[in-house]
Length: 79
Image 1 (tube, rainbow, N blue to C red):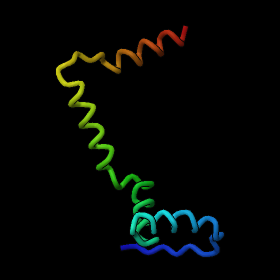
Image 2 (cartoon, rainbow, N blue to C red):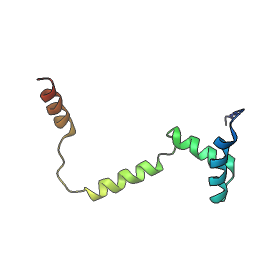
Image 3 (tube, rainbow, N blue to C red):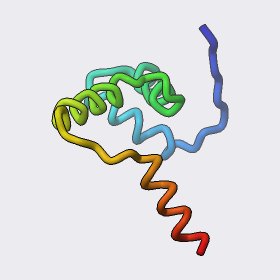
């Protein structure tokens, strides 16, 4: 596991995540670890869950080919 040390952060930058972590019953370190994981795209479970929900609600429907729509848009714009 990697470690990161960030020095000289203004107090107000730290206070908000610290308060949020406390409200969630979590440590500042755990809260910041989660924020970094989400920002780096490592936590894809939320996206995958949403994608599954969309797929389930549109199951059985006929879908327009996105490639055809993009091509039509580009052809129209190039005139």
